[in-house]
Image 1 (cartoon, rainbow, N blue to C red):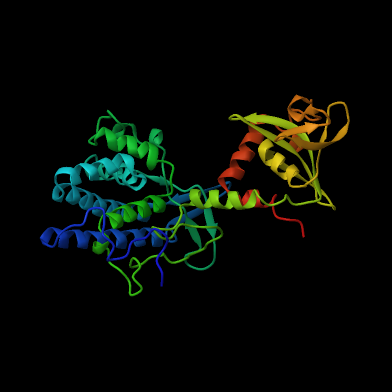
Image 2: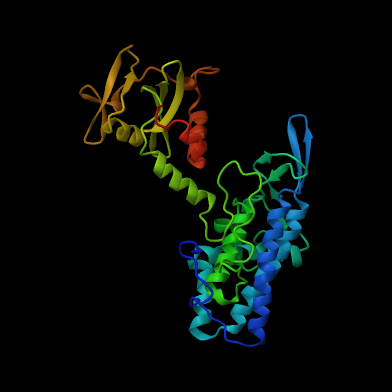
Length: 369
């Protein structure tokens, strides 16, 4: 069975091969301890206590926290051993990967979590941005996520009363760990050490990493269950790239308003599905692509006209005027029921939710039957 793209096998020369000896044997044991702990973290996501209360859930991710602590303890031992065993240019190159390599940045960032647990006796709690329900004993799944750096206990932040962590690890937590799914950061840690010396990784009969991909549980969307699979964000970008080249759903669209967000013009309006209308929100660049591809758009102006949208040199036009210079029909209205009259902030939030979850965007881009 072929391995994943970019994945080394047991015979691939690693970035930092370790010669035979007692230290290599200890590393091999810790590699196994790391991957075993990551598998326990995954299992704990369906065994966390979930209590239902009116209007909210109470989540207890204690088992996930405990198993993650075991994984990070093994990772820290591996990390320390590499620093001790390497010398000269190799050691310098390894340490530099804490800054230059995406996986190495995660390895360095989770040192803050491990140090808080071991030295400051302050376990870093996790949240879960969503739940997925299923059936049976393991009927709920949680999706543990690291807190953003600014939401960590003040005493373990840089300069805090119990800060016992190098400044670089704080920085790496901030830019490479905080806000991410716990399981994806652990995948990055496993991948980093596998790249360092693939011959140390415990492997299944098919040559893949033992225990991976992780078993599929209640899975409604994509999940990263293997160190060499794309992260959710990477997979999401792949889906957006695929679906933005599709024609929108429906027979045509009418633009009724424009909103600016982070340098992008967002156009909001209605899609004609034949039997009813559906609201849409897309970037001006995407609308220009759609129009150039032959999908019909009109725009409703403040003066009450409905005009055909065309494209001239990638600029959206209404007649001989750029669309950006035309006053459109709808504006933000307090307490509005119509989507096209919602506040700018509501529309920007909708746009960000579409970009953050391509499955939501797909609802507006599937070709009409």
